[in-house]
Length: 347
Length: 288
Image (tube, rainbow over all chains, first blue to last red; front, side):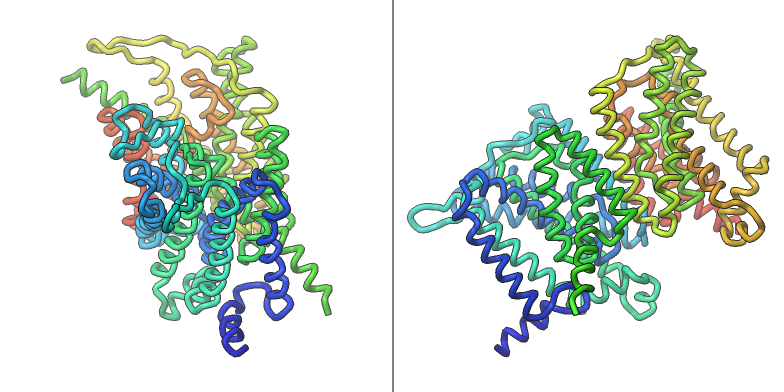
């Protein structure tokens, strides 16, 4: 009991909504339901649900950068793409045996974090913030997309992996866990579902600990007033850079999981439309809290998927309308507004 | 030797004109309100579409471009009144909202008007200088860029509106206390910015294929020019256009279009490390 109390203490704090016995009971029920889910659904639906989960890491990373750090970045999809391509290049060159896919995943996520850190160095040491941060990261994303889109020729290859321009890379092996006897290939199926669900729970809890730690509190202090944080003796650039790199690593994780899930990555996964989606998820959910971001992301992706039946352009118009309405009517996010309503009613 | 030099100057002038035209509308809005309008590309698209429609209906190209600018400007005024003016206290949210608008407009255009729009031919033909042929229309674009800068200079320094606008930029509350309708000034400025974007779209409509996502071909250049230039159109956008135009022309001549864009981006990322407030920040600090 004492140990659990200690862990709960680190999971809870001023920077996250939801605390106490009832919240964690609800959390446990949600996780249990998610664990039981594959028993009641066919494999195709389970595979599709994994696809939903893949994106949440990127959204949680953006929540850390934007919601907690106050740095609006459109660069998450660039890091997603770097990591996805990185995974593809590594696996196509070295093959899936001997756990190489897991090494590839680590290398790809590290590459995304490093790229984020490199961009972040110039941005934060130049003391760029606010609106400029948004447009510089967006420019980086768009240029990267254009660069990848023109790599169609045979001269664009890394080792044996062709980049294939606009059509993208495909045919890389999915994540494979080396196992005595027979390797476990994580194709979009029930085992992968549990792996991604486990990662998701870990990421959520890990980020909760992070934002409630002293690092998270300083990050929020910087968001609220950079000058005050500087005066209090914090080198805000280091904190911003660290948050940006960690958020980038989460985008990278999404990139790896997506590429491994579909065995496929294209430049359009970094394009203007793709770059807008994480912003929609996080803004609509409620960027200033991890839980509302998580719930909002799943809801919005679900709605988007449902609308895509009528054509993706209609779904995108709906996303745009949703975004504008959220900014105007509930700047804290729709899920956040709903959560506030519920908690206010409770005595 | 002369041929090469002329060729490079042509490239350089073309790049400068493109950067200045792309960025002027964005810079006017940013300089006035500190708002970055992510729907900038869609205003450019709107101007190009209206210009093309008018030109194909038989309106002379010059008037067609004016129609495009007017349409985009009106759209800008409507948008400012409906949405943007509620968000001046929250600049980051303005980015998000204009981004949503951009999504709605580009995808909405795709739904309503289909994947492409009939083009207008490039007028004026070409001239041959030392064995290479150059499109005359590109020279018109260079002149247009210079003319637009001049017109903005006159508007902001020589007219009653410009005086009120500059007062509003400097100390909004004081301007308001002195009886200036700052809301109206903001709306008008946003409209001017949108109209400039529309004019840019109209000017470039004869040189490119018109698709609903064409705005994204302009915004990188517009963003980097505004980031390097800072909030002042004359002390920022114009010098930034020249500086970045040089880089773009050099890189494009050397390695092609994409290298030009990558060069721009790298230049910008280095410049912000050295000059966080942009060129205009540097110039203004030295003058002060």
